[in-house]
Structures are given as structure tokens and as C-alpha cells.
Image 1: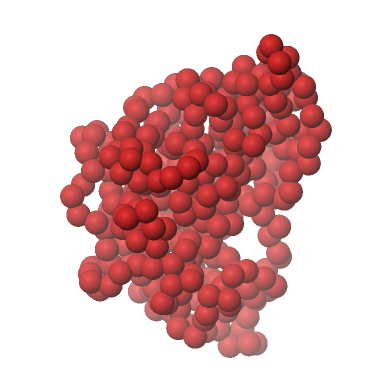
Image 2: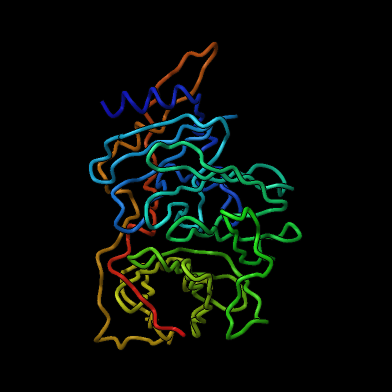
Length: 334
């Protein structure tokens, strides 16, 4: 039944699988149909299958993968990717608002379009057009504010974090910077992301710039903190990921060992002693909701509306970093 419903939904949108992975900076080519958008504690996952001029949006249960609703949107949009490991964003922590963005193809756009969707009905509630080149970096817990990465000069390394007031339909004038170091410029590429269990804090690991660091974004209050990771190179963090737990953020290596620990209240960085390092089960990144992703994603329109259902196995995707967060983190940073 699930495959039947999804095949019908994809057929309605004439979905081409190759178009599904056209996310914008900083992660062009990332296929977010493998992960979709979700939030810590939210029982649902939202997956957008873009076509040429339309998108089939699907709401399903994370536990079991049962499709609950689907809707054809008359515009091509994708779930936004926020890091090179295909971490995603777009769903507000209260579960009511989903933000989708233009797929990227060709040169940097002059105008960036977003669509806000009511998650109960999957109907669009707002269509936004921002002059310039933006990607979505986060959304406030109530869905009333979007956090964007603004790219300047066509470079993925020249960017600023901006806030957009949804109700006021305006881009707030000032960039969001670390108030402790307001003149320090962010550089590097986003490698991976984790969320606090309440969905308020977004922690993104950046590498490849002058310093490796974790960008901590408070999506409720519009604050940001850059936490440097001394002693680690871009090569060191290439296979690392973040895990947010109560009171701390751990940086884990490929074997699951904690190599740096960040206090979520003070942002002090420590290196655990070897005997204190805890090894966590390795997360293969694949969605664990039981949904048959390999079969679901293989649909194409051929000839005069004829559909051929292909059997295609997706490589293991990276689940939303939101679903990996373990418990609430409530920083006490002033």
C-alpha cells in the first residue's frame, strides 16, 4: 500500500530522480530525498521529490514509514541541505512549519525562492522571494523566523548568517555574529550538524578554513557562537560528526570515540582523557524508519505520460542530524 501511494504521488509530479539532489550552497548535488526533514522528537518525516516545474511533497511516519499524506506543489523545491553529510533543516521544532527552497542549477541565482508549508495539510502558507543568493540554515522553534546563509560575490566561502522575519516579510538588517568576536569572519565548509533535543540549538561543524570550529546557532533568540577547535585540522574532522546531549556537544571520530567535548553552557572545549573516552555505536546515517527508500525513489516519466517504475537502490543516506540528538541541551550562556 505504501509503495502504491508513493508511486501515484510521484507519477502525479512527473518526478525525475536526477533532479532530486540539486541542493544549493554549501552542498550542491546532495540528494535530500534520502533524509527528508524532521525534528527531534517529531514523529513525522517530510520528503520533497522535485520535478521540472512541480514537487511531490510526502509526509510519512518515521516509525514504519507509513505515508500519511502527499500533495503536488506547483513549483520545484527541495528540502534544504545544511552540511556535506546531507544533514537537513526546514522543519520547525514545534512541527507546524516546513520550509522548502529552490533546487540549485547553473550560476548563483539573482533571486532565491522559498515556500513555507503547513505540515498538517501540506498546503503552502507563504511564498518568499529574496534578492540574492541564499541557502536555509535553520528555522525558529515556532516557524516565525528563518536563518539564512547569504553568499556574496558568488563564492561559497564569502557568506554571512542572516535572519528573516516571516510575519514582517523582511530580511533583518544585521548579520548574526558571535558577539564575543564581532569582527571575526566565518570561513570554511559545513561538514555535519546536530540539534539539541528541544530543537532550539543547531550545532554545525565547519572545516577547511583558517580554523576548524563549531557554529552554535540559537534559533529561538537569534544568537550565534563560534567555538574554535584547536589542535584539529581539516583532515582530522573530515570523517567526524557531532552528538548533542544534555549539557554538552561531543565531537566523535569515525570509530565513535569522543575527541573533543564542548560544554553547552559555557562553550568551553576539553579533550577527554583516553580512559574516559566513551565509544558509541557507529551511526551508518541511513534512515531507520523502515520505509522502502530504494524502491520509492525510482520513478520517471517516459513518452506521453507513461511511467516506468524502476528498482533502484539508494546508497545509504545520512539521516537528519535532528534525529540523532539524544536529549535536551539548554545552554546558560548569557
